[in-house]
Length: 222
Image (tube, rainbow, N blue to C red; front, side, top):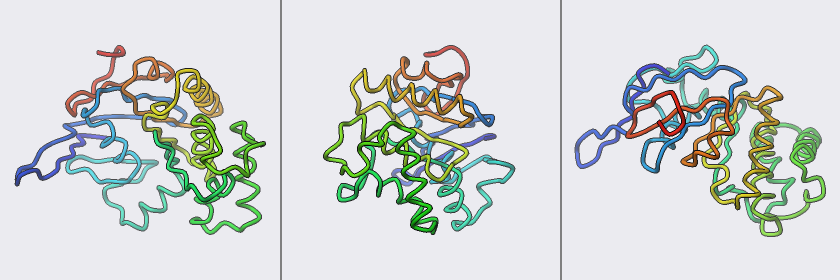
C-alpha cells in the first residue's frame, strides 16, 4: 500500500478515516494492526480484503493493482486468495459445521465430493473431527470460531484476515485460537490480524499501530 487514503462523505464534506497509509506485508508474515475503536482498523481490513476501494493511493496485491480491477476480478480474489475471520463468526445457523465450511467451495463451483473432502480435512485440522454434524447453537464460542477458521482456510487462501478474532471468546479459549494462528503461520500462512488488545497483538511477529487513521511502526502501544 502506498499513500492510501479513505474518505466518506459526511454532511456534504469529505471525512478521512485513513490518511496517507504506507504498508508492506511480505508473504508468510503474521502482522497485527493495533489500535483503539474508531482508529480506522476495520476500514483498513476492508481495503486489504478487497471489500472496499481507496479514495487515494495505490494497493498492489500479488503484482496486481487492486484499485484498477473490475468487480468480477475482485470477487474472484476475495473467494480464492483471501480468507476472512470475524469476531462474530457469521456461521449460518441452519447448516452443520461441515456445511458451513463447504459453503465457499459451493460458490467456487467445486464438485460435491471434493468440497466434502476438503471441508472434512479442514475441520480435522482445527480439531473438530467429532463436531462436523453439529449446528452452531450446539457448539461453544471457541468451537464456532474454529469452524469459522476452517471455512476461511478451505479455499487455500494466500492471506488470512482476522478482525478481532478473540473478541467474543473468554481468555483461555482466545489463547487456544491464537495458538492455532501461530501454527498456521508457521506453516507459511500470511496472517493480518486487527485488534485493540495489546496482549493479542503480541502473538504476531510484527505490530503496526493505527491511530486516528495514521499508521506507524514501532513498539507495541506506541
